[in-house]
Length: 226
Image 1: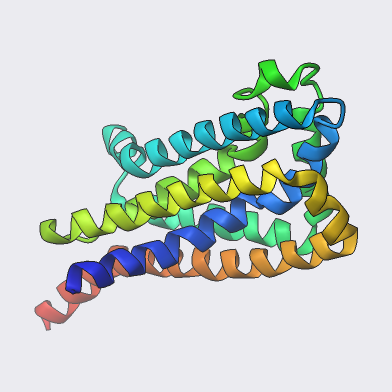
Image 2: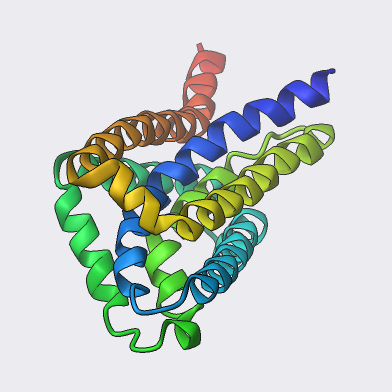
């Protein structure tokens, strides 16, 4: 039961963070424009490829990102502090200037003359899962618990969040044209800002975890001396 709760907690933290930074609804509207000349079957195949590649990128960042950082001598608390700042900065930009974020993503993907040949670059990387998503995934992975027996439920929850995020990307991209008609410009803006606020809160929590890791030993040492 305890392991199940840990898995659920990890899932409930990771999925909103990934969803907010990927922002698949806003991306789907651009995806719909870029694939407007493709047949419905071609768009479905392309949506599947992008979702598969995006899931792989998120899983690698979640599982191996912290190890790579440790190789360069970056401590876990430093990674959490830096990652939390990146998440907060990304959320702040999405919250107050979503138009700028979407324009940047559209500029990254506009050079894909043949989307079938561009499923990985640029439609997956950096359009769908760019540096921001990778930073968030690495930061989430860095929040691993110290106890060894808690690692499996922790990574199970995070991995499930990445897989679910991939499924969401697939579903939303698959029906991007319908979604574009349903939501419209105003609906997308509202949803983007709500997601950005959730991401801002998650980034603040990760930042607090990093500060606690870094400052607790200092305070403990000071108390021991007195």
